[in-house]
Figure (cartoon, rainbow, N blue to C red):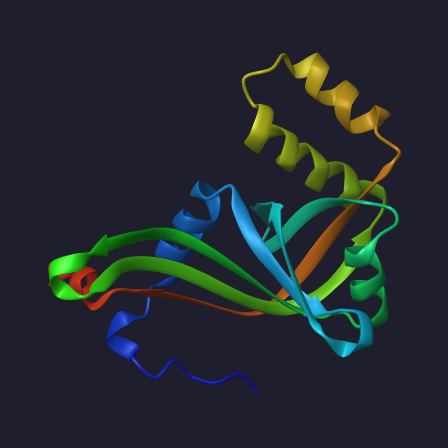
Length: 161
């Protein structure tokens, strides 16, 4: 169903993908928007229990798009260093495909807490819990990942050998 990566020597393993997803703070959600135009939007996210979670206002283009058509892709760029003398960039990135959905109940609470810990882990635990339990104006969205791959510049792959 999903294409295999053409340049398999540049493929990252699942541990490397998880490190990137844990480290990065922003990714780009791509979905089918108004009039079937592609719509991509940067979001803060957490990779938790092999799912991607982010928060969203309860109304707007993003929610309209994912409730209309749940298939999405999500990409993260870990590194993108320009190497001008080689006419290239040294990069590491991840792309995931899956279905987006609004989460509720314990999953919402757990995912929201994971988001809060990622972005505000230095705050007192009581304040973190208050933020999670007190926020009713936002949805928590999950991407149930069906396929995820990571890729790096060939220079990184060669350095590993």
